Image (cartoon, rainbow, N blue to C red):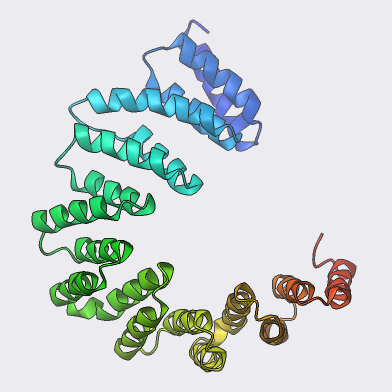
Length: 318
């Protein structure tokens, strides 16, 4: 492996192993390439990706952390290792590590808006709403015409429980771009619902619908909020409207409604909704499986088993 030709061959072979899912063999080759070329960070980066694909996240993180230290010392921040670490920590819900890597990046590049934005997101996910408010307030000062920054400032205020200032931030976003009003109200509704403010979320979703009554997904979100408040009949009417407006996605919307009901232990209602989804698309086993799940949770295992047997017989599931 001393000549470039040999390295090229091993590199090609390692990439082929990655595509074929032969991760352990790819890892072995990338380790050898990294050892033979200690100044070539691309081998270490691809070794990290091989570890990640093999499910060895801590090994992947160790490689990426080493690369990140190099990135942070450079005048021009490339951020390849940083981006991958952010992706891993977000996906895995490792909020404290997410915050740590973002803080280190911001300390190295304190004026970079993209890094500050990601740090603000990390603070929200980690339950540090006060720090998130500081970050997004700073960003709105840097760019007072950014609807994105004001929307996220509103999200941070919701996370902190300050709903009045949250509304002010979202309204500022709408003032900057009036055409985005429906989307902004929807974002506010999603955030309010996530933090348990379902009545406020209902109002936000209804505002979104007023501004864009043709968007069927807004009705679905409103329906979910109503389910969480126990207003099932109203939720059913709202979901029926979503089905009318998005007939091509009717089964998917009904399936979503059924899952929402199931989360609130409304088993009988969920069963009836899943039945409608199956009727809309009888050839899609996904919906039948959810109907079986609803039967099982409702204490009707025989009916659940009957569905599973029928699916297995016709090759609908394995």
